[in-house]
Image 1 (tube, one colour):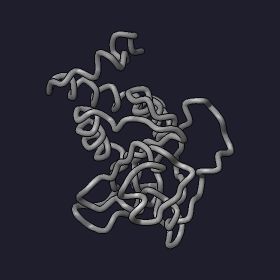
Image 2 (tube, helix red, strand yellow):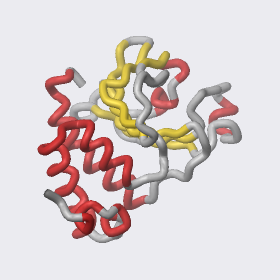
Image 3 (tube, one colour):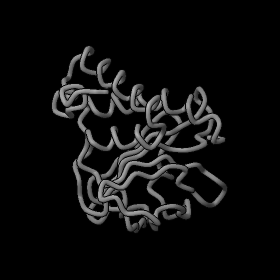
Length: 171
């Protein structure tokens, strides 16, 4: 069983390699003990966004294989979304994508994009620089700041652990 010290997000946000390694160890223990949903809950505890999800790209649709809602609601309208309406469509194999407020963001206006999601940060799930087969993302219905550089680095490292575990889900 982990102590509060081991799972305290403020402790785990240390911008040191040891802080990142500790966070990854906690993530792995959450993954081992409670599976993907426990890992998403842990990832979500580190940021302000309401949702943390893993989506699988399926043609014109992105389907939530796993979706964690900080408010605990189930039967979410974000379980499946048209790729053309998803902010995840801007993620590439090499580059994450993030927006703090899609209603006021210049890039979003240039692309004529309107979305239910206001803030978003996501990165691809794929094998070594291949076309993404899915995404790992944080999102919210209200404006949120992008995760800190430390959190973005942590999320980038975490996706490798998650991707290995997700192989059985066809991601």
